[in-house]
Length: 133
Image 1 (cartoon, rainbow, N blue to C red):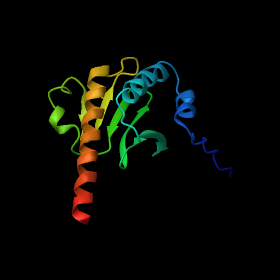
Image 2 (cartoon, one colour):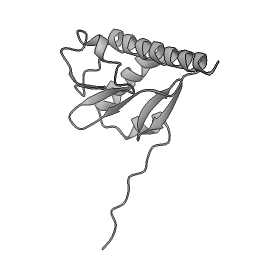
Image 3 (cartoon, rainbow, N blue to C red):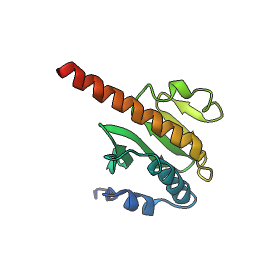
C-alpha cells in the first residue's frame, strides 16, 4: 500500500498565499496588508501551525483560508473578548474570527485587533521584565 503524498508545507507567507485558490488569495492578501500597516518594529511574519502568522513577543496572530471561509486567529484567548460588539456579525469562537472567502474583514477592524494584540503582548512582556527585577 502506497502512502499518500504529503502536501509541501509552505516556508513563507508568499508561498502559502500562492497555494490559495481565488477568492481566498485576494482576501488574505488584503488581510495581510491591513495587519502589516499597523505592526510595530520588531514584528515578523512566519509560518506557524502551517498558516501565516505574525510574531511579536511570541505568536501574535495568524490567518488562513479554507474551502468555505477564511479565519483570523488571535493567539490569545483574551483578544476577542473586549471586541464582542465589533464582532457580532461574524462567526467567532474563543480566539477565532471566521469570515467569507470573498469578503475580508474591514481594515479598521483588523487594525483594531492587531493594535489590541500588540498592546496585550507588550503588557505581558513588561510584566515579565518587572517580575525578573
